[in-house]
Image (tube, rainbow, N blue to C red; front, side, top):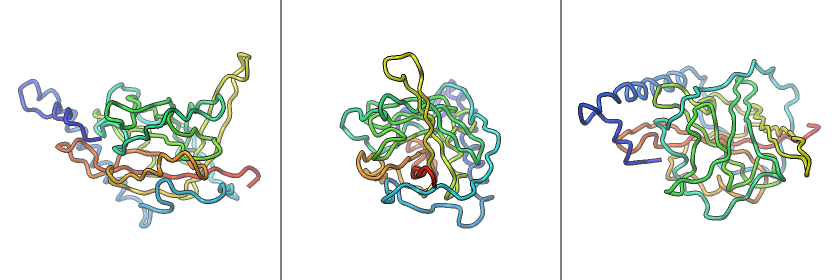
Amino acid sequence: MPDGSRSRWLPSSSAGWIALPALVAAVLVAVLLFARSAERPAGSGDFGRAPGAAGTSPASAPASPAAPSEPTSAGSAREGEGPDGEGPDRPAPDAGPSGAAGDLVPVRVDLPRLGVRAALRPVGVDADDRVEIPSRSTEAGWYRFGPAPGGAEGSAVLVGHVDVETGELGAFAALYDLRAGDEVKVVSEGAQGSTETTETTETTYRVTGRRTVPKQELPDAVFRRKGPPVLTMITCAAPFDRSRGGYQSNLVVTAEPVRSGG
């Protein structure tokens, strides 16, 4: 995500002082995220499978899943790029679109235990071949040049902001609070055949890993199209260095599909 244009937020001129609230907000968000991490119990940092990895079979459903809290929308609806900048720094594959499973397109991701819901929209790559992130903090993006959630193979990638320059947390700030075994649900919609009827499906995953990875070291396996199906969710992670373009790492959460019938 490094981007030289980020220097526009520094108060290098009298006009630049207008951007001071954004700079202060970014610092406050960093402090908030640090405080939240300090409140977590020991061992609640990185765990489980490495980004892009997967087991040989879908995960079984939990015997007694935790009761979900009331879903709420995460973040704010403000337009604009967050301080975390563009999408994952790892260049996206050059291959053309992989497309959704059938005619279904993912439209929402839910984190039931946390009571979080975020709208999904298809995203591609920017001029630097980096994955785009929706500008709205309430939204996350599905990387449309890779597999779709619910597909039979490959890594379906979702990306979202951890925060925005106003200081509000983004939809994927919640990834920091996910635990091993948590459910993730992806809702997909699409036209049913030649009719105008809309088909809706829900794919359930279970979290199996969370890792913090320097952006330049994000493995190619995160964008793989073959192999066992996984859901890969990515947001930004500390350290934050404005002179180098923003956050320097990615938080990557891996989840495997739940086998129906448990």
